[in-house]
Amino acid sequence: MASLRIGSRGSQLALWQANHVAGLLRQRGHQVEIEIIKTTGDKITEVALSQVGTKGMFTKEIEEALAERRVHLAVHSLKDLPTELASTFVLAAVMQRQDPRDVFLSLQYNRFTDLPQGARVGTSSLRRQAQLKAVRSDLNIFPLRGNVDTRLRKLENGEFDAIILAAAGVNRLARTERVREVLPVEILCPAVGQGALGIESRADDAATLQELAFLEHAAARRATTAERALLRTLGGGCQVPIGAYAEAVDDTLRLTAVVARPDGSQVIREQQTGTDPEELGTRVGKTLLQRGAEAILREVYGKSAAAPQQP
Image (tube, rainbow, N blue to C red; front, top):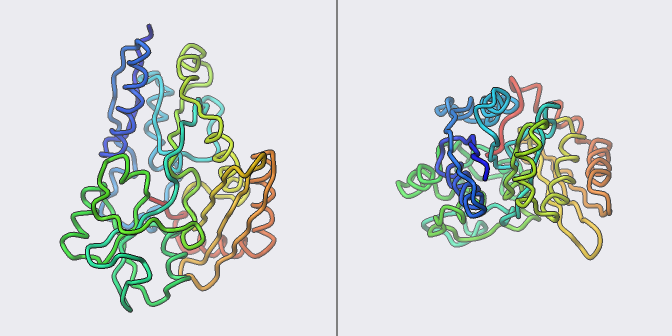
């Protein structure tokens, strides 16, 4: 069988994901190695992601390794992967999706609504900040960087009353001990592609693409295609205050999407259904732009060197 080399970031979660894929490939008889690649996003650790903003900040160096044929495939959190790939690369597989929602973690408080006035909440995501502020304008939201263990340690050290993380990440790392509540989409609409793993490879590497085909999950592909089409239509990578969640309803997809001002003063929500994921995402994106999202996004981009990353 083939000998395959996976490119991955070196974070706890990234390595869990790479090892998960490696295990599935080994079960099919492949020899698999993992090459750890430090990305721009990994190198900038002391600055809030909302102050950084580089398109593909968690993927660029990994794609360079793919192009140089040092690795055969890359395992990404799909929410980190830009919606437009260079023609030399292809999204070879979208794997079965974990829970795409965000979770509320706290030592003292059992629910988000239990937080006291002026509570300190940790997140580096403008998407989360904007939607939380829309519900609770009194909250003090502070940057939170680092891997899952680091973020939990900061919570346990009393730096925050609560932190917000992706459900998929804490579930995969079995670090759910401080999870108090899974936040509903109506309060906190997830990041595009959150909870899904995207497998990227070279478009001309037919042999590897064939070996990766078994990882594809059709329902996850449909849902995330709609979400990524929405994001592409709004003119963003993964780095703007946008939430999107597509789910199957009978024979159609229902796409819920949000664009919000970072201070929560304006939140535009849209929900539509359709059967063609690409068309649905494009349609919802255009509707949001017409309803005022264009002005919000122009303002967000204008106030930062580039749009902020959603962790």
